[in-house]
Length: 482
Image 1 (cartoon, one colour):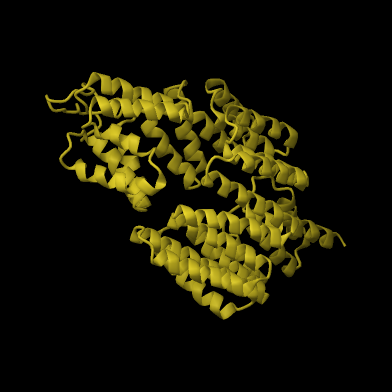
Image 2 (cartoon, one colour):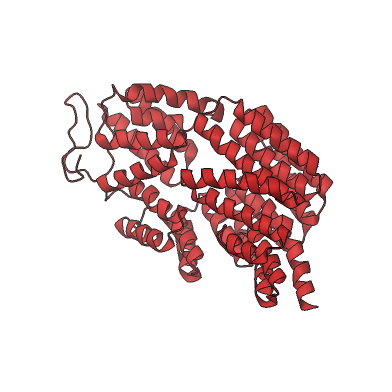
């Protein structure tokens, strides 16, 4: 249906009439419509508990309102979400829905199935149908940001902000886009505006805390993360953010103490799992491999109890990489082989199985490259790269280049390593450190110093890839000066 056409709704149902400005909700109940729109308002302000209640009220007022049923489903536990969504799928064909609603639900189904290209295409199609709806426009604009098209993303975000200056969600992502483009003054404004509009939302303080962290303003960053925790004592990313600041300050005991305090009051295994993961990263940064492996095994045990095959697969990847960095090659390979076996035998959708198995193929290629088994690494890299290019997965293609760079670096082909690594993930500390080594091998001490200094002065949240190379970059800088 053309975006300028009137949306035709059955006489049996009550919905938005006239020219389509926003995505409609088809319902015979005015009460359901009011409750649903209230739920959207609560979502905009990240008030999830209130949003859930509002959507449940809408569904109670009209049990046939499929949009309300979908929104309620998003609050389901992970173990139940797939089943609940399947019930919604089965109702779509017979449901009385507008074109926009059908398209909206088709996007959710595509993304759930891992058909991200289809989901992206339909997201853009929906945005064309409703050019004046900021809730529809924001996901479409985010695709530009996700795909690294910063200029286009910022233009879209600014259009949404101008369309509705009171629309809260746009300011946070606009802040990140400005930051990534190097416009720190505008980023500062956008994050502060987000706080002004939504002071009860812990995420706005968390985001500004991360912004300050990346500027090296560690004490001020901690203060904003503390504000997030004051609003929500167990806001996970704020706890991680405080630990990240302490890591950059080399105050490792403070980092672990803060994580231990959060662990002592963690209400569920999901939060506990994340805290164990963070503890493992801090230990890895110190080179305390045994303690790091112990913490990450605790994280993995909780994931296994939860039973989510994708999360288990991801956690085994982290554990294998950690074991490899610790020099425990055989155990690392066994962990990856088990990950492939488990995910292959799981009951998740076939495309997710393929995605995770290919990710583990890349993990194995990296492991063999680190060990100097270049023939094995090259064979797996070629297999993985063929798949990545055929699937159009940009991040995976970058990962393929990274593996090729590791192989070339290990073989002493420094020019090849530079060429490959420069096509890998831009700005990633692990990649930049390997680039520094490649330039050192070429005798280009200036470029090697530039890359190593980037890594040592990098400011970001906890992650293994950074912890593996941070202190190595510092040592490399010292070596380059001698």
